[in-house]
Image (tube, helix red, strand yellow):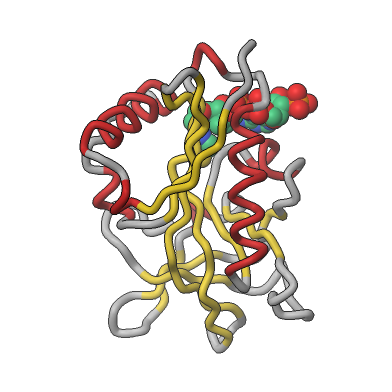
Amino acid sequence: MSEIRLRTALSDELSAERFEELTRLCEAAFEEPFASAWERVGPGVHVLGEMEGHVVAHAMIVDRRIYLGHEADVALDVGYVEHVATLPELQGHGHGAAVMREIGGIIRDEYALGALATGSTGFYERLGWETWLGPTSVRMVEGERVRSTEDDGNVMIRRTSRSPADLDLRAPIAIDWRAEEPW
Ligand SMILES: CC(C)(COP(=O)(O)OP(=O)(O)OC[C@H]1O[C@@H](n2cnc3c(N)ncnc32)[C@H](O)[C@@H]1OP(=O)(O)O)[C@@H](O)C(=O)NCCC(=O)NCCS
């Protein structure tokens, strides 16, 4: 098995052809249409795992804000991880973990906290992510919070040296609304 080469790039730095390649990768991994998924989450920092010039694994970080506590009184700018995927035929060789370790390093250096939502908590736990145990909500434009019970148990965080020392994984957690998949 060839080694993968990790590359970091801002969304603006990726060509249309690169996005088409990433769309094919994510569609193969998630088995769902992905063409509009980039616009839905907005621009960010991508980590590409390349093998012989082709992207075989990917993850990205977008800037988002989350709110902690019963009164949602602690607001944190987080690095929110999206579109984590490895080509199905190359899964199980450590490529997803390699990309996520690079993502973890960026979060450690640049954010107060990392966050993501997933149905595969086991994959992230071994990479230092912790499952949020408290109730999840979406913070609407006017500031009111709407419970997102379907996401309870799927939200994970990754602490950094800038994270609040008294972070309580059982506290309520909310994220700013966005279309389709708020978390
Ligand atoms: C999840 C995904 C990115 C993992 O990529 P990968 O390249 O196969 O992962 P790795 O080979 O680096 O796996 C690292 C470890 O995590 C484990 N692992 C992989 N997927 C896992 C999962 N869904 N749940 C629990 N553990 C998992 C592997 O067994 C491996 O363990 P090991 O180190 O003991 O061998 C890949 O399976 C994928 O693209 N899935 C479809 C899309 C998806 O679900 N994305 C992420 C969820 S939002």
